[in-house]
Length: 182
Image 1 (tube, rainbow, N blue to C red):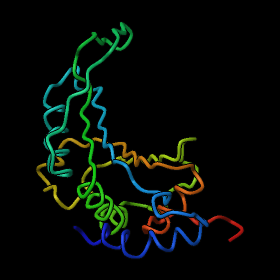
Image 2: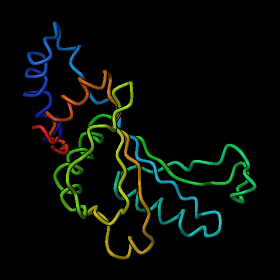
Image 3: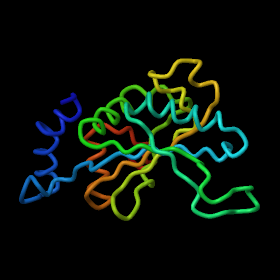
Image 4: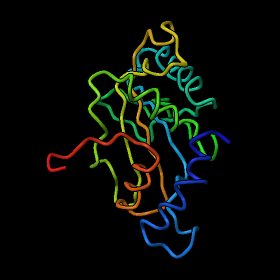
């Protein structure tokens, strides 16, 4: 068990139960999974981009990524149905907490011009989405791994509503941007 998961189980569950006035510890919000998605639309012309994205995602997550394919043909984008256009990986349990711990403590502080995460990126189901424009902020990657830059979308799936999810992520240490009034 890593340090963030241990902190969640020993400290955060009890404090969130009191703060949100929940009757049972099983009602406390938790992270279900983390989905990391890399869209490589440019891979239609250059297959090297898809391989680079697959290798970097494998190093970042510690799991083998799955290729995503186009579901429809779109002539304007020169896209055919069934052509690989991205890769994704789903992290659950200990790997999800390990990734979130590295994201909070190492990756986000290394991001250029970082002023905090948006508090408006929650969907109606309490899931949080953030995008990174450059994969080179991950310490697992060497300079050679980042020769073709690509971004990634990170979705943190929770089991609760947006207000409780925001409280959970703040308790976990997510650096949200400060509002003007406080």
